[in-house]
Amino acid sequence: MAEILLKTEKLTKSFGGLVAISELSMEVEEGEIHAVIGPNGAGKTTLIAQLSGSLRPDSGSIFFQNQDITQLPEYRRSSLGLARSFQITSVLQNFSALDNVALAVQAQAGHSFRFWSKARKATDLREPALNVLEKIGLSERVDVPASSLSHGEQRQLELAMALATRPKMLLLDEPMAGMGVEESQRMVEVLAELKGTHTLVLIEHDMDAVFALADRITVLVYGQSIACDTPPNIRSNPEVRKAYLGEGEESSETFVDE
Image (cartoon, rainbow, N blue to C red; front, side, top):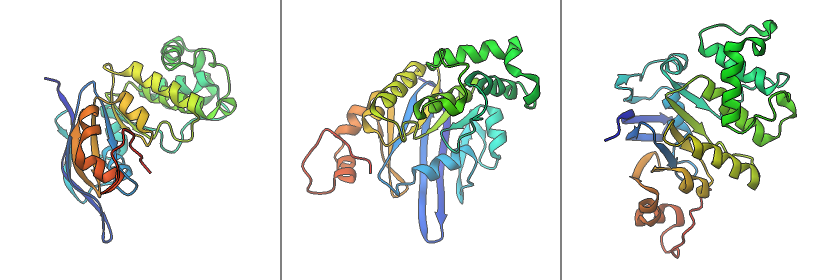
């Protein structure tokens, strides 16, 4: 049986009279891609913010590697190996792809950013950075300034920078947002290659991507989990279909997450 890497117990968060997350208990197993889906207003963004530490819950607990991290700030969670990507971009636009990832490697090693020392020239930074860029499909774009990369390539670069910190778990917040069909497909391929070797919590509106990637899916509706199961079982779950399609709608094989 796989080890439980992250667990929440009765996690709750309200904004005024609006309950965004209500007594949510969920578990993420080591090595799995665990997707969280739900209609707008379901609480997905609030959940990711609480897991990353950028938002404190009103009540309930969050455990990472059996350690209670509920009150830990974001930087402490990052040092434990819990990394969030695809939020406000941290890419340095005037630096090359290689420089960006080399600086992420440097930060992971516990050093401050030595912007003027050309981190890319240090072998102990350059080699790991090149390996990560190759893994996510940017090996031919290492010398290109981030500002000259396409939107999809910048998203890949953000992923490379997150991976360079050697996280035990990645929280991915809509990695396909704003991408075209080809860019989305490439990102799906990149994430699929991480499957089994990295633990991912994925929030994504692209249901084709979710069902192609996820080992398990948690479905949120009004801040509560109405189901957590494998993709085939989620697809056929009548309660999930009702939440997405509405009572009285004809059955469909496609979920619409609007």
